[in-house]
Image 1: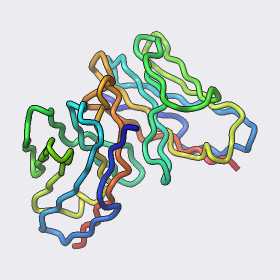
Image 2: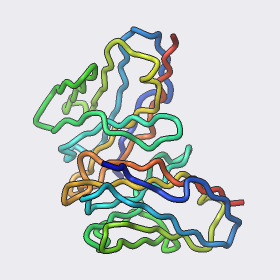
Image 3: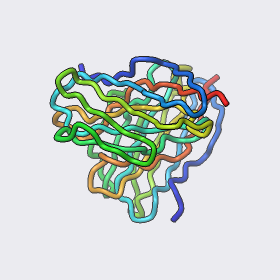
Image 4: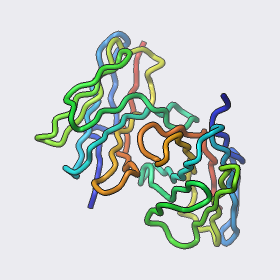
Length: 112
Length: 114
């Protein structure tokens, strides 16, 4: 079946370091990928998205990279701050649907 | 602009009872989706409503149902509660005509079934 998964359940980094969160997807027909951030006690919040016709998209301190050959995307956070501590989800609608399937999430822990 | 509002935030029920959760989307948003979040299964899609019509449904038993009103507010109901229904139930709204792209989530309703 369809699946979207993150490689590591937990990632610990030092404040100021760059963070990289990875995600793999199984459906090559997915044409749209989204990253969400969920802070403790809150609902997920949209961070950035990328369409399948792009390899890279940059936002404020965040960059998403898409490698369609190996069905992999990553979220890079520059100069990670304590406020970045949260669970990060990648999501992608399977081919033929527009409802995103969410990965399990990676918990990012930023140490001051 | 007010965000997505979910009520109640926390509730405790016992097995066999039923529960109704409410969601008020962002003003102007007509698409409302519901998700169940558990530590073991992550975020699982329940259903999506648009203009009072259910357009998509996830793989959940018929005990889970929902509806949307003319003002786009939505409710979901779970009947004959089971222990495994304990979860955070999240509502998300979208300003597009389909629930893709940027979803705006509420803070969720945390249901505990004893």
